[in-house]
Image (cartoon, rainbow, N blue to C red):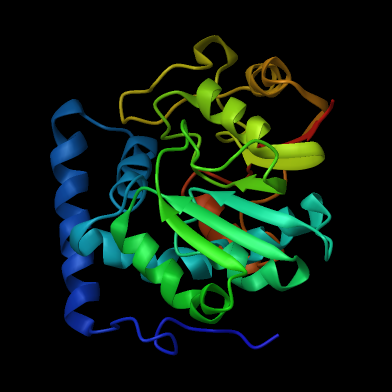
Length: 263
C-alpha cells in the first residue's frame, strides 16, 4: 500500500510550527512538574501529556505530525487483533488523525472516526478525503461517552490511547458495546503494564487514569463483553526504533483488551 505523509495530504509542515510546538511542549513540562521535585518518570509523563490528550495549539500540530509515525507499527497489531474483514464497518474512538482508518480501512466496507480535537479531526478528514467523498467514511467531533451512532451500527471498534483521558471510562466502554452488533469485536488499550493494581481507576498526579488487568477485564465484562482477553504487545509494534523510544519513555508495553459483543 502507498504510504502517505502529511505533506502529501496538504497539511502544513513549516519548520516554525515544529519549533513552536517543541518550545510550547517544553514550557508545559516545566510548569507542570518543576515544583514537585520530579523523578525521571514524572518528566517523561509530563512530556507525554504535553502533546496528547486533546491536542490544540502549537503542541497539537506537533502531535499531528509525530503521532502517526510513532503509532503506525502498533496500529498493524490492532488491525490484526480485530481480524478485519470486507463486510466490516469499523469505528475508531479517539481516532486522532485517522492513521488506523487510513492504513487499514481498505480491508473493510466503511470506516468512522470520532475525536475531541479539532486539529486531529482536520487531519483525519484530509487523510480520508476520497472515502468521505464516496460515502464510505465519516469523521465526527464528539464524546466517547455519548457516541452519535445508533445501536449495532458497527462490527468492529478500536480505541487506542484514549481511555487514559476519558472522564468516565466505564461509560465509554458501554457506548462501544452499544454501537457494536452481535458478534462485533472491540480492541481497547488501557494504560501500561506497570501500573499498581491498588490505584486502578484513579487519576494520577499528572492526569492519567491508572489501569490494571483485573480492572480492565471488569470494565469490559460489566459492559456486556464476552471472551475478554488481555495481551501486552510492545507499543512500537514491529518497529525496533519506536520500541526503543517507548522503553526510554517508560511505556514499553500496551495493555490491549479484546472483547466480543454477545447477544
